[in-house]
Length: 258
Image (cartoon, rainbow, N blue to C red):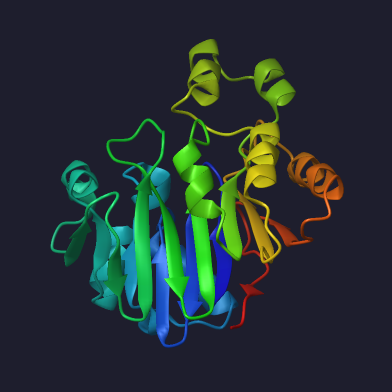
């Protein structure tokens, strides 16, 4: 199984996942043209993508999904409430619906969508499992609930949110109501929150950690990396590869093998 953050941040998000003959996009928050360009940059053609899976209806996660799905003639996979809320993006698009909390299969993958706390109609994280092991994705969440921890504890790769540095947010240019929204139970995880989540899910078989959805205004990649690195240095449970996602370029590709 391979994973690569094509884009990660407040302006657009998309994660490429590959397992055997299956290639998925998780979220498509850039234009279709830009997503295709970034796929090409990692040696993948759009015609190879089998489906687009959506975590929630916010524009930075779904903006390009309909246009890309129509162009490639592939389905968009999302929950019924998210489909209903985001129907304007998905006209004349093949849709496969799932229900949060209930696992389903797509090609050679078992996919477990689980509820998370965010200010969207039906936001979900995912555990995506193959014969190689499991990958967990939990971004855009205000708090890391016990369910989130339980879902991510078995994964060999995790993609977790590290949205903001608390001091940068509070001293930054955002209006107070937006700062409060980001810090709320339905907002985003700070670097320290992300490190605390990682500490709870560490296990000997965790091989790769992506830090995702960093704010360009209220965070710095070095601060996110430092918070996670300091936590990892305090334990000898495992030493996963740490990759920080950015808005403007694709990340390193991380691969796990069976």
